[in-house]
Length: 202
Ligand SMILES: Cc1cc2nc3c(=O)[nH]c(=O)nc-3n(C[C@H](O)[C@H](O)[C@H](O)COP(=O)(O)OP(=O)(O)OC[C@H]3O[C@@H](n4cnc5c(N)ncnc54)[C@H](O)[C@@H]3O)c2cc1C
Image (cartoon, rainbow, N blue to C red; front, side):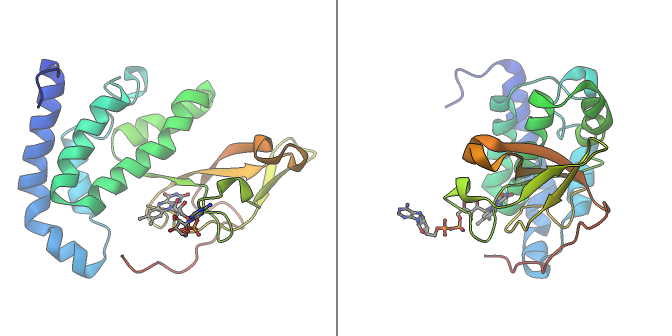
């Protein structure tokens, strides 16, 4: 049922459906088996300007909402759940930057995400904190210079190996429990930032 969709939203559905059928369907088995990240598919997606639907126009996106983006993810999911999750998880990590990032951070990160050049990961889960997310142990300590040093381990992070930007949740004030948590933007290559083994697909 799509009677309540605007013409623009119907167009997103059509584009998403066409993309999924033409670009994902023929290669989904291959990527499922090889467990490679389907970069060629995402480069195609970027060309179709679909990566930045939910990113404000001033940062290179289309300025649409979460619902519009969900319409795209829904169409991709009908053909391949894993590829749809990759782009959805990137959006999950991007929203904290859109809503709570400062101007410098938005200008630095959002255009590359909107253009599909960079993927984002959202890292909250830890070996001892899954459903009980308030149990996270990763902490962030402010240095004399005003920046932060993070210590901890995250797991099951979608896009982890392929992303360039990591929105990571860490505790800045243990006395406040989970209310003492903050979000930090990490970049691949930062000193001390290492990766564990790649998990097998479920
Ligand atoms: C495909 C996939 C992608 C993911 N991507 C990300 C990501 O991008 N970023 C990220 O931070 N995390 C990610 N995760 C992690 C995900 O958020 C956690 O797996 C989830 O929070 C559950 O945690 P857990 O796996 O430790 O399971 P647990 O919390 O240990 O749960 C194990 C089982 O116990 C049950 N259970 C837990 N607590 C209770 C309770 N109180 N009462 C009754 N039953 C309970 C659960 O329902 C479950 O069946 C991903 C996970 C998957 C599978």
